[in-house]
Length: 483
Ligand SMILES: Cc1cc2nc3c(=O)[nH]c(=O)nc-3n(C[C@H](O)[C@H](O)[C@H](O)COP(=O)(O)OP(=O)(O)OC[C@H]3O[C@@H](n4cnc5c(N)ncnc54)[C@H](O)[C@@H]3O)c2cc1C
Image (tube, rainbow, N blue to C red):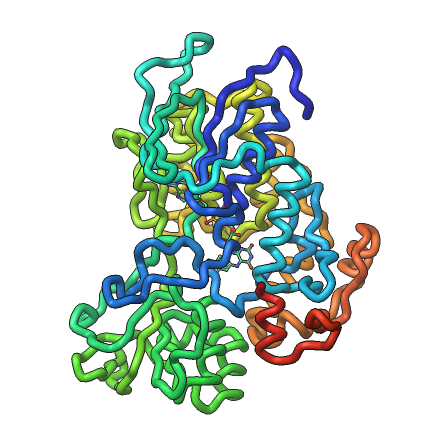
């Protein structure tokens, strides 16, 4: 939608230059707003900007501080690339020869390239301020004279220089995969051996010959256990409910294929001598414990005077996961929902925010928004959804309806829905095989063809070459792909 003279143009600060922040920047600019994206790191991409060094140095044994990206070296996407692009900028295999990774589920570096290409295509780097950390966002003393909207003071730090600026609106897009969530286990504080959260796990090398307990068997737990078992002596996967873990075929397949991989119940105690005691009374003496136990939503820079709170990963009250009713429309969040198709869902939210700020779309009254936010939460509770999963959607029809009612965002085509679901089910069936061993249904194959994708046969990435054109194998090939 092009901007015109009847719409408002406001000065907006976007916090964070990951997928959500970049989606916001693009939509806000399209709508004619004046945008500044403040990003604390030296590049865009958020999680996808791989950080090799983590802070496991004795002062921060769990690697909780300082690191932003949770991506490990071997990580490949779990979402098919054909579904993982912006609506008008498909995530095609990059034309970078040996450096590219044309697979349907490529490595993380390929997705970072795509994000950078997206920034270039839409000139977003003009508005991104790198190495600029937002320290505080608080209500400004004056409201906008035109419409009485709240305005915001943003304090940020670039190098040693702190700056304070007033913006008409702030979009918070800082993600929710950077603050590790840790369990409370008896003896954890006295454990003398290695323990870390998967947030700071990068490569398996240092676990060579060790006995490792991996806590949590969701996507990261399974992925990391499958990588560790190749170098470790034994890997014990500790599940809250082993019965549930065995309910999908993938776990039985993993266990039957790898002799040194074992499924255990939850840990009840960590002993100083290295013994790990599990809920069924079994014990192992371990060298390391890796917690794959999720992340916490956190906004340390927001000074909202109680208008928005975070309680066990429930951020609220929020109308449609975006607007705090009493602070709307000038404070908004893009990127809170999890288990949605990304970046499309964030693009929807961003477009809605941009159009609300320009006056093309109206919000209900604060009272109605609050009622709707409370109703949503009550609905989740009635459905038995734990508080920490308030913003987990996992429902493509909900996403379609969300797009309809917020900004008229196009619905996800049937072939893409099928592609997404078939990948989810294939992952549940066999987490080790689903990325390379797939067959597309006729609906998917037809959709791919109609949209200019070549239906993929299971494929290998192009083999990297050195400067003289010789094919690289093994570790040098991996390094070339990741660089
Ligand atoms: C290991 C892992 C694997 C994943 N795999 C997939 C996958 O295969 N498919 C999928 O769809 N999703 C996947 N995800 C989810 C993925 O993170 C999201 O898809 C998406 O990238 C989140 O984007 P975001 O912009 O919301 O957050 P982020 O990518 O976390 O970006 C937030 C940005 O905000 C910046 N920031 C934070 N605080 C401040 C501050 N105070 N001042 C300035 N800047 C700040 C950060 O530096 C960061 O750049 C994965 C996540 C993880 C952790």
